[in-house]
Image (cartoon, rainbow, N blue to C red):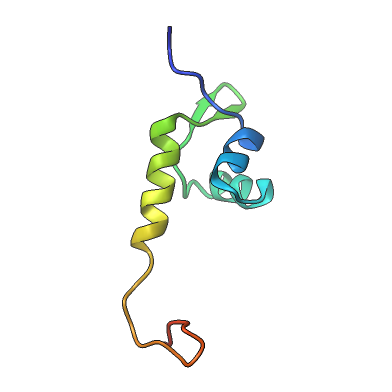
Length: 71
């Protein structure tokens, strides 16, 4: 049996992000996803890549007094 693919609401819940955030990233083609006709779906591998890419976007830099990176 093939892997179960997740809908946008299901994937957003797994990633703990707002659906609107995920929909916007899909619209801009910034996150891996599958299209089945007009339907957008996510595999487990897609979700893992989204998390991995998010982790890679954090750059080691100077930190402010609040712990946030400075530019």
